[in-house]
Length: 330
Ligand code: NDP
Image (tube, rainbow, N blue to C red; front, side, top):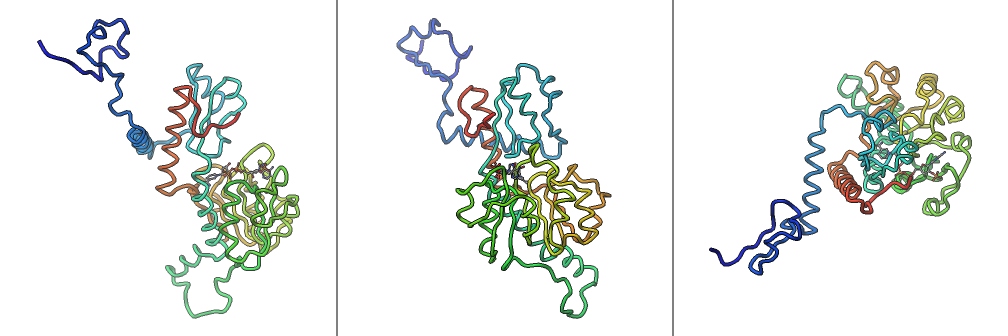
């Protein structure tokens, strides 16, 4: 009837190996691979991830993956893929116990988050939001020597809580501003991370006492929860500036509020708060010396797109029981 046939798609798929079509020399059958080039499948993963992101835009997403969510998901849940490097929203012990794998997105968001940390630091120490407001509300009148003065980085000491990927990227960007000295804390000294900045490993109390700028870039763990508290702020200089781009719970916000109101520290900039979003009547929002951003550390188009592709590829690899591009070691 016809000379020959070539099929990339069959019914069913896969076609049973004893199917009569396989016996014919005039019939060539492929395993549904029409789009299977590395470039095409990568592009498809990127587009699917972008579609997913667009679909999620504007939807309220519960962030916590706790025991209750895991119980509801049941034993079919094999893989979790988070669009973040922070994993404090995942009940890791419980996840490990159930043999669930976790993909996350380190490295590719480091530059964007460090850039935002520096932008926030500069906005706070040079009082940019206040200055913009003064231009709009008529507060800008004659030139006055000390009006809208802030604190500069030149000759300063910068203390970094958590000299990890983002902490180092922040230090790298701040160094050319003329920072005199870098201090850092962590669970142990990391000479390999510190050498580029000749950063000195110090106890938290010393970091608070000696820094002109404190930048928090550690992960949120039981050890770091609430470490920036009354004792910490009381040790900081009255002229110092506090920046947090890690997680809100590293900071005791009541204590931070008191430190800002009482003039114990000069100013603060937060990209992360507890809770998120911060209620619009929160006391911190009434302070001129506190700048709060809505958790936008990694929010550049390129970074979010790269995060989406990595998260999608992690998920695909997890589902196929292959090694993930970025798997969290539990
Ligand atoms: P890394 O794992 O590279 O760095 C985390 C750092 O935290 C390490 O240097 C670690 O130091 C430090 N740390 C852990 N315990 C302590 C402690 N007790 N005291 C001080 N430091 C400690 O992670 P990243 O740099 O990639 O990311 C850091 C965090 O930034 C993320 O966990 C996330 O919460 C936050 N983040 C926020 C974003 C935003 O939008 N604002 C975007 C991206 C990330 P050590 O190894 O010595 O323990």
